[in-house]
Image 1 (cartoon, one colour):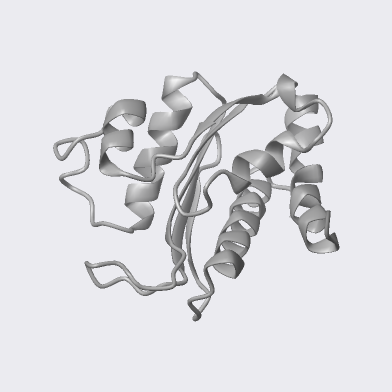
Image 2 (tube, one colour):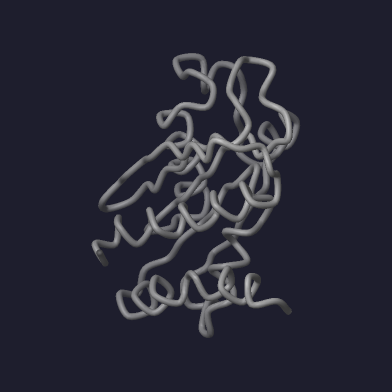
Length: 165
């Protein structure tokens, strides 16, 4: 495994032990990161104490099936907005009765979204006792680099929500 991959998997080494020590749990819903956020959280020894599960609802059918989402549940939200990411995080959190829910929605590239959002854009939200959301714009269309950057930003946002910074 490359150093870059080890660094990515080690990124959650700070948040995992905090979740364990607090007896808290987390559920993940991620799109453009394709499971990287879940993998980062699972790479921490003892992850079974806090990790309840993850989904990659990349398509509309998977969002309907796994998150019970439809046009009515998101009608009031703009696509690729922090509010939309928060809705995903809240649904994931509620479905698994977790302390925390984290969601990432993004356009990794190499092209942008048909509704005008550029590649290299992600919205990330953490739902829980201290809910936070952010928008990440990398300014480039390198798919793998964007996926890595979005996943790291999600763990950093979780650390902020846990008040570790």
